Image (tube, rainbow, N blue to C red; front, side, top):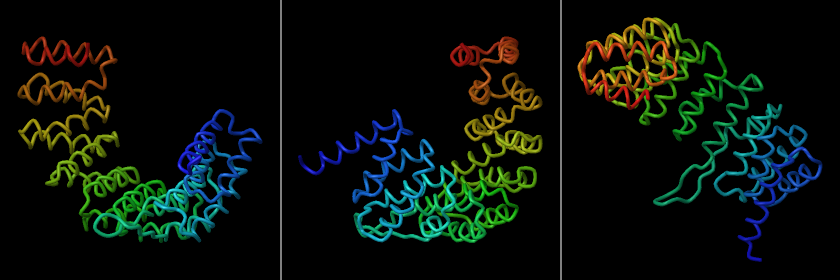
Length: 321
């Protein structure tokens, strides 16, 4: 049997272990895959171990990580990343793995040069250090915020939110002030900052509602909306009133709907009643998340009937029927 077919067959057998992952036979097969040379089999086994939190296989995971770290047999860094993720999911006290992985770089040949394939590994290991409350976690998260790979910077922001420490908010504010060439990193930073200390960060995050990048504006709006704070609603409302372009208002209206505040619902109904038709249509889109709320649905219906606009009436039927 060709090697590729043999690997595929072995991967299928490992996948089948999900039916009874806690059986002694399954655990023996998973340990065997982790102890083997194939990084693909080790990756699949590690994902199963992490999915079902098979804590008694933590030693096998740690040994496999050390072995792949010391060899060139883990193309794409897939095994090491999956192992670190499994240890994180289990909550394993394996600081040596996380400390090694958070610093690991692995450059591999790519079109036009080389690429670092260990960004995910560094990010997962940062999360692992936070989960076990390692004393050096914040040190490595600070470094990771300036990582060369955007994926690592994104995961650093997530880990800072997960850590829930005041100094994490300061690091995120500094990072956001300095900016990032990848909008996704800024978006993740805004979300993380609002999770850390929503009340204190509303004015700061609201500044990004005027950012030239549309994705950043939308992320700032949603981060504010998800805080469900009255101050956040006021910041979003002011932006709606300031900008007359319905397209610019669209993400703001959705964010206002997400706040779930009574005054937010009243404001959105006023937009259906009085704003230009374009804004009214986008307001109905935003309110669709409440289509199963009979009281609000009736209020929206009555507002549209009173206004008497056929375009809004048709939109309501399409979205709320």
